[in-house]
Length: 220
Image (cartoon, rainbow, N blue to C red; front, side, top):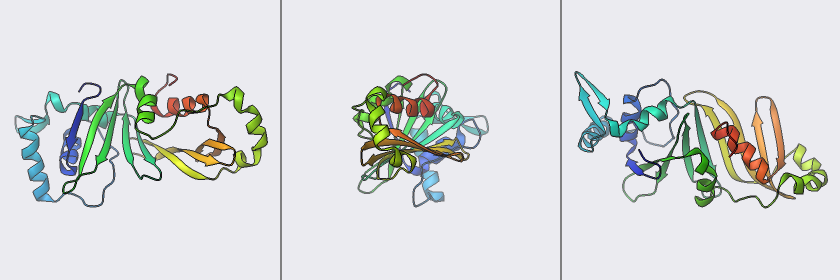
C-alpha cells in the first residue's frame, strides 16, 4: 500500500481482514452493530473479488494487496483520536516503519471505513489538514510568562476539549491520554496516565513532545 492510497471496507470486511492477518490481539474501532453471519459471508465474497484474500491450501490468507493488515495487527501501539465537537474519530496503528489510519466515513445506507497509510514525518501536517488540531502560535520560550500567570490552571487543568488522543498497547490496556483543551490563558496540552496528570501551554515544542511519544521515537 502506497502512502496516500485510500481503501474502503465495510465493518465485516474490516473484521475478516484483521482476523486473517498475522499477529495476536489487536485494537479495533468501535461501532454499534456487529456484523452477522450473512454479512461475514458477503464480506468474504467481496474480498475475494477485490483480490485482497486468497486460498492457500485448506486455509484463507491475505494476498500481497492485503498485507498492510498484518502490519496493523502487529503494530505495538494503537491510538484513538477524537475531535470535538465534531465527534470525528480515527484509529491509528503505529508500526515500526509506517502508520495506518482507519476512519469511519459517512454514507447514507452503508457504514464503511477508510484505510490509508501515512509516513511518520507527515503526521503533523495530516492532523492539521484533517482539522484535528491547529499549529501552535507559541514556542516554549514565549510561554514562560504564561505558565507563571496560569500556574493554578496548569496544576488543575480544565476547559473545553478540542482533541483527545488515547494511546493503547495494541490489543491491550490504555497507556496514557492526551488532551488539547481551551484554557483561560489559551490552549493547553494535558497528559494523564496512572502516575497522574501534567499540563503545559500548547506550544510548538509541547505538540512535538506529544506527537513524538505517540507516533515515534524521532521528534515530529
